[in-house]
Length: 235
View 1 (cartoon, helix red, strand yellow):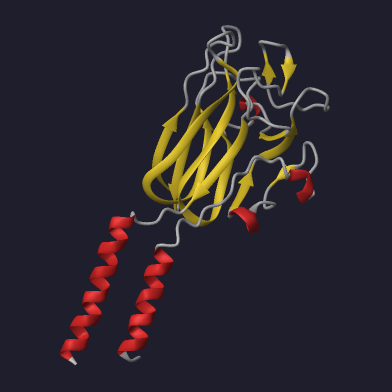
View 2: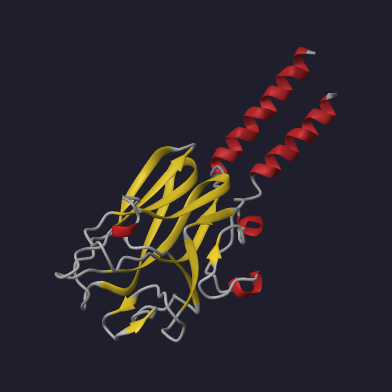
């Protein structure tokens, strides 16, 4: 390869790095029916081609209590299933839920997993209705990011020990995973004390692959150009 071709290849590489993050769009499940999914259907690879993710343990759930069992969660403040508290927009018409009580899962505390077809460096989303009460116990979720099966980061949600005003009853808790390097899986592990009435409501998910900051890109470009120049002088 001559110097002109090397320089062109270098410019193309820098342009690729500077082109921005290869980010998946928002997954809010509002388009799930157009992907062939109906209420209570298992959601697995339907978002793989467009958003780089496969879900394990998730089921599509319609908001409101008009649909039949099973339901996602109960908003204790208004007595309506799968309904957000009025002060918080964002749940939409569709979201993801899990199934199976913790007491019947054989000790398996992972309710939902997200598998990335290619490793990412950022993810965010919402877990809905983290609440509890004296009779049943508490709810809490541990968001675990892994790469190649190795745990890179764990993030505990607030502890849900009540379902009245001031709790997360009918409300979302937002999590963010980043600044830990590349990861290819997120597990949602139950960490509360409830043995029944447990379900994970999940919505508004994003993931992305970050790129170097503009200053880093500039230094990288100057360094690579210097290498090419040095080789040219040597020749």
